[in-house]
Image (cartoon, rainbow, N blue to C red; front, side, top):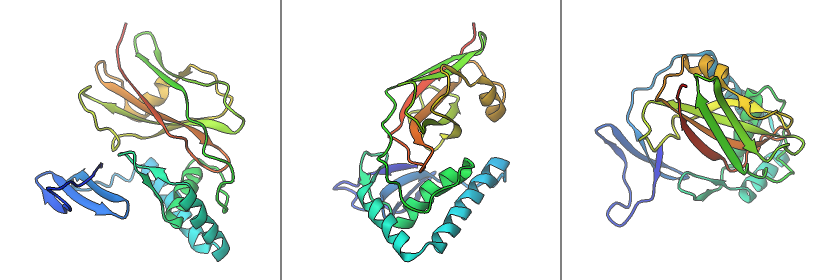
Length: 230
């Protein structure tokens, strides 16, 4: 899904034209591909849905004072969208975002909003993609990580290096603790997710510092590498 900023020629656009759908929500206007939804019901998809449902149920059970605390936290901690604009989430959206992330990872989520600041972003992210040498790995700095601050990774495998918009293709891949040893070999994990890695395809990774205590993510950094063999 791509976000847009309407200009003087189009103050508001809604509906579909060909394979493109224009719409908007409380966080702004956006464009997405018009597709027929699929429902593969994979184990991963079912786990994501279950985590979201559990978080939604937990929100409904929260006392008023906790909901007000989340409302205050959300107002003070806007998220940055793909256009670089700050968006203030609704209290329930902020709660569900952090809680479902932790629940999906098997971590018990607190019912109160974070006290600590958002983690400091990673400084560097380096990918290697040589399947012939068995060097499909990721490295990042700074290391070692602060106590309780790991790294949260999302990846995509694309066929063409010319594809510039990949946000909708990136999906959760792996998270590692503050004591992980780098460079980290990720070839087997990628094969389990995507099957055999093909020479010429593009590996894109987005990585962010991740708080194991409250589920907060830093601003991510992104890197891309072509799969090769030697």
